[in-house]
Image 1 (cartoon, one colour):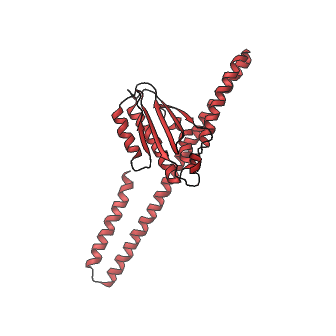
Image 2 (cartoon, rainbow, N blue to C red):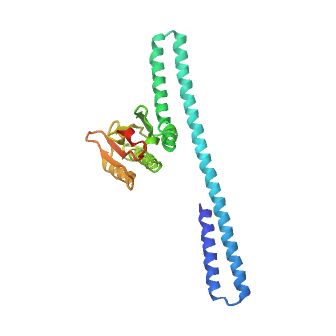
Image 3 (tube, rainbow, N blue to C red):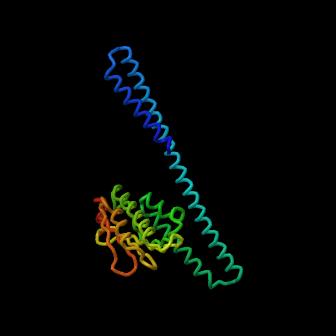
Length: 254
C-alpha cells in the first residue's frame, strides 16, 4: 500500500520541480534537456499506471475465480449429501422417505434455475456465491416464476438494483444481530408489482437496531431510482421498488 502511493507522489514532485525550473531557465540547451526529462518522467509514470492496472485486473480475476471455484465446490458438496441421503434411504428400504427428499432437491434446483434466469450477471453471481462471501447470513431466496429482470431494466438500473440489494443485506448484517457470532436469518423475495420490480426483505427473530437499518438503507438507495419502504410489522422488513425502465419490455411489467 505504501509503494502504491509513493510512486505517484514522487512523479508529481519531479514534474512540479521541472516545470518550475523550466519557467526560470534561459538556456536553450537546458530547456531541451528539462523537456526531455519531463517527457521521460511522464512516460515512466504512464507505464507504471498501465502495469498497476494490469496487476489489479489480475488480482480481481483471481478473486472471482477463487469465489467461483469455492461456490462450485459447495454445490458439489450439497449434491453429494443429497445423493448419500437418497442412497441411504434406498439401502434401508425407506421408500416413503424418498419422495420428500426428491421434492427438497427439486425445490432447490428450481430456486437455482430462477436465479440464473434473472439476466443480471452481477446479481446472479452474487446470489449464487452468497454463502462464500456472507458466511454469517442464511439467505432464503424466493423469486417469481419466469422473472427476467435483464429484459425489464436498463443496464444502469440493473446495476443500481444489484448495488442496492447488496447494500441492504449488509445493512441487515450490521443492524440485525445482537452479537457477531450470531447467524442472521433473512428472507428475500423478488417479483413484480404494479409495473415495478419489488424486492422484499424480512428478518426472522429480533428486529435489531431499526435506526441503523434505516440509516444504512437510506445510503443504499441514495442517488438511485429506487424507493425504500419499511414494513409495519414488529419483524424487521424492508421493500425496495424500482420502475421498469426498459421501454421495449415495460409492458411485460403490467
